[in-house]
Image (cartoon, rainbow, N blue to C red; front, side):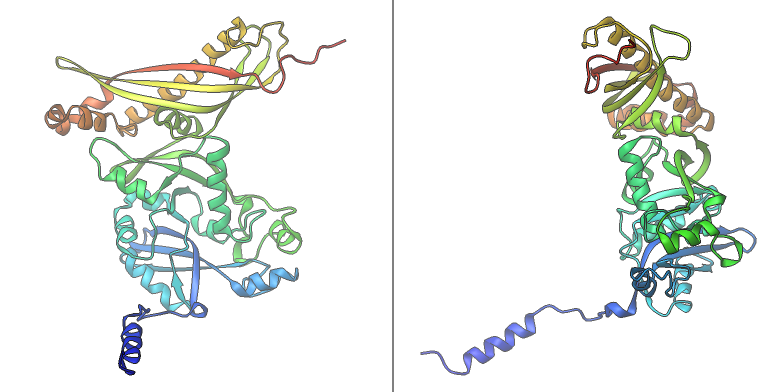
Length: 417
């Protein structure tokens, strides 16, 4: 028979072994950061950090429809900024202007200003990587325009600006490929590898969508705050790419360059474009959507001559036909074959546009050098030091195979009587 005191001893041991939080922070003492942005004060040589914080007081007031609350004008967030000699010091200086401890783990978006990007984003990335609260799944965006104004702006259909930016990035990637979506982890992966340069999505700030100067919202924002999203204007235009050399921004790419990168790397989900009808002139157009892309890159070595090939396979469907036709829409019809050829040329031209721009900036964003590093490691050791001289004249061949597998939900078009 067990001693009576044994269960008590076992219970005490179990309680001692139970894990707990030695340094807990009560939820009511935390301020949830929705988005974080870094800028550069060039005049004073200081880093600036801007945090968009969820405002629970305003969120509660918004439920009653009175547009009130601590956020002002119905805004469900609060924007706070601080400066410092380093990104970490700027982050720490935020503690002096907030009544709650800032909690960064729920931030989904990292915004970088053009000024900072042209100076170099290495120090900011070092902080993001070392700080335990920041998550590597944050989406990274380079912003052209008024970054601080963007952090204060409201988005139609969304309660907070940070959530609006995050959802806009996801939606843009799902519906079209005019943008390059990168997470923090992908940025680290690119910068840690030889022979490849960084390419990040671009966001341009629209002045008409920002709050009015002096801290007062514009009339459009006021209407949205008190009666839904009517009258609101999106404060940003998403599309294009920021091209880096090392950790410094060296140039902008437009939406076609972003499409070219997504084609060449097979990273886009959906692509859409409009082409001329191959059998009819006079402004007749076809609308195409691509839904499956595969790509492969191969290095070519012939003596001292170096080159590479990009092979892209695309599947798409007809979304709209505005030209008259009496042709077979089957996958083997002559009309379809001509459309496929035109589509292949469109895809190829996007890739070549990106390749031309990257050569002009001498920024190997498609990673041809990394291709030699992986496939020809011995050769890469010989050419690595001179890759900046080799890349602008590298012989690159782009091959595109296009298959139009669907003609939509109908097999014919409406005929005039």
